[in-house]
Length: 219
Ligand code: DX5
Ligand code: ZN
Image 1: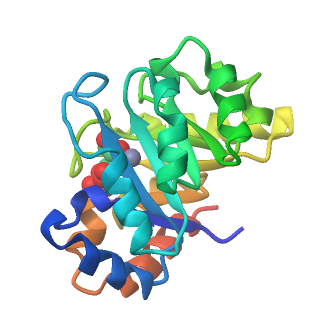
Image 2: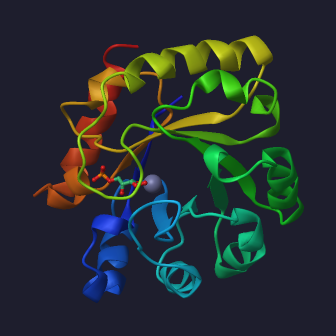
Image 3: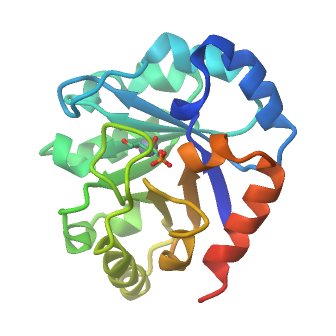
């Protein structure tokens, strides 16, 4: 399967969001990754429902909404209404992941579960056939522009095997510190999120193509 690329809007210039989105519209990127942070689950606050709704107005690309918040169950329908296509909550943020997955599907959206770097992929064994996406965090969530945590590379290989074993169709996304240097470490990823490396690239179209190649080379 061709690798998908999802720029993280967190690294865009928020004062010129509409402009950034219309530029993205013309680029060979697949999804727009929206990082929602509440200052409680993670030590940073980014943006919430009204901003996701505004992003929706300026792009036709699928919105991949990454909820780094406590009590994600309280906000699923609001983010769905705001225009999210994929709703990803954190495994660590709820004792009831199955209930949330069911709720997201009831809302007609794709359901993703994100796991922090220190959370083993094996916790997902039973839920994996029920979900559409696993977001493997390769930094501790909270900030763009952090360094890729090397041991996450091994987790991805284990997740790939687990996915096969349980017969799941879930896409595997990697999020955090992805660049042309680290992409070869994640050949298992179907979806690459890139924030800083993407927005700092002088030729973003060339960057996306190079990123796809860099991660595919070792498979
Ligand atoms: C981290 C976020 C990531 C981040 C990616 O908490 O979930 O999506 O914005 O940005 P880079 O690619 O700069 O690490
Ligand atoms: Zn993210």
